[in-house]
Length: 141
Ligand SMILES: [Zn+2]
Image (cartoon, rainbow, N blue to C red; front, side):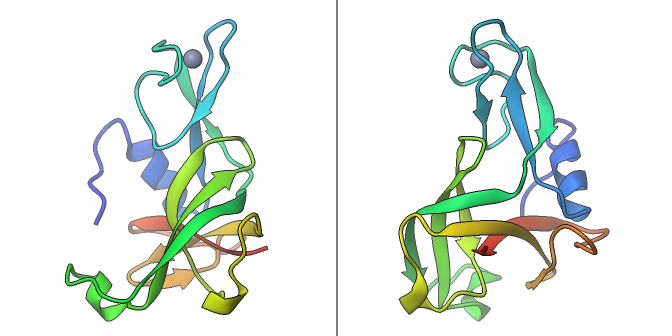
């Protein structure tokens, strides 16, 4: 399970409400968005970085179907699709693809975020996971 600290608390609070947050640099001449959340901008090292909501849209960059993972809770979940996606805002993100048969996965396919809590994916956006820890996963748009 992810570890929540004072810095990442806003991210996990938003995820529990079904919202994906990004970090965006506010330094003049930069303005780059990044993920995972860091306290400084990984492009210009500025600490003028703030949270902003992501639209939740992404495209599939690459994936791997995991058939074996002895680490809980993944052992009960195989096979699953570990993936890297490109968020519409630019950052590349490690995640998991859900609700998509392996044969239908395609590089560049459009995806939408949803949130998984307590081992099961629950709807993102309206009526998303409320309370507890939720992690962003993606499904076909
Ligand atoms: Zn920057």
